[in-house]
Image 1 (cartoon, rainbow, N blue to C red):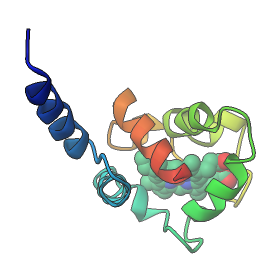
Image 2: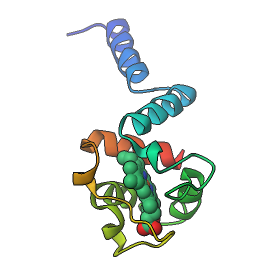
Image 3: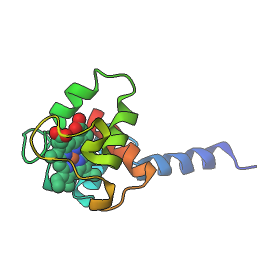
Length: 114
Ligand code: HEC
């Protein structure tokens, strides 16, 4: 059996690695969005090719299960809601962008909603 202090240290290290605190989480989310090329078409606070993440948050945070809806969009692109809604451009589906794992999709969804 592992002792409590060791267990705590390990889980804290894991939390830090995953962006455990607020600022760390935001930075990790931003870094991931950058790495997955989301920022080529999105910015945090202004509309570019796609809507700003702040706007997306404002709309999705009023929905039920926003996290899973956001994950659908990341996987399917605009087809998740049957075509472009915000702009005339389409959000590409997962096959046209760097692949994201389920874990990364969840992290990005949480980051957008945070
Ligand atoms: C090639 C450009 C492009 C890239 C790359 C891109 N997006 Fe988008 N995204 C768009 C456009 C354009 C829209 C608006 C689509 C619409 O109106 O349906 C959009 C919409 C969205 C939405 C809103 C969903 C909705 O209601 O339509 C989310 C969430 C989103 N993108 C997240 C991401 C994330 C996360 C990434 C990176 C993994 C990403 N996007 C990469 C262009 C892009």
